[in-house]
Image 1 (cartoon, helix red, strand yellow):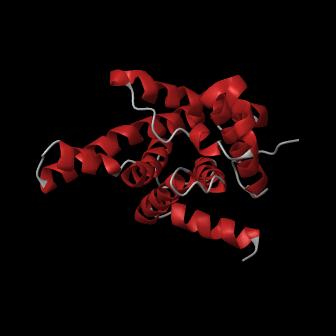
Image 2 (spheres, rainbow, N blue to C red):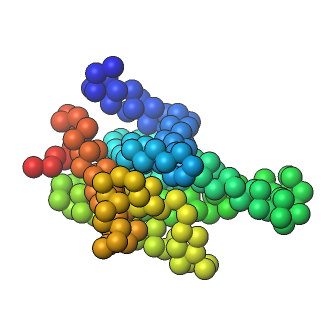
Length: 206
């Protein structure tokens, strides 16, 4: 399918509340495939680019909700092992373990919601340079918050997914947050390239 038709389909999904929720959760659910044991690192770029792309389009959901539902999909899949820890080793009944796992995933998704809200709120999706620089910076900022608040849970940081990618070479110098920054930078530039020139929120990278 040609790119304009794909973008059109993407926009149609975003113009429906339930379709946009489902779309963001599916996009987020793909994200953990970039990590062990699957280690398909390009999926991290694909999944994250779709989230950033959604933030630049007209949607029935607020930016916070777009990021939140993306995070729900990501953490329900990527942190599902928490259920095993709670049920098998914490001896919590199945139903209780499921509820606690879902609550935990919803809590982690709040950081992605905050990140999406800040990207749109602070940049207004207006100036190209502001967006290209702010999106990776705010993504890493929220990853850092996730890693320190309430003793932190540094899980599914995008930098960890890039160990086997060319960006992995930066890890020894910049650490995981530096790798995360450059990974999201690439995603943001890619999202810019995909945007239709006719969009009201269009911006381009020159």
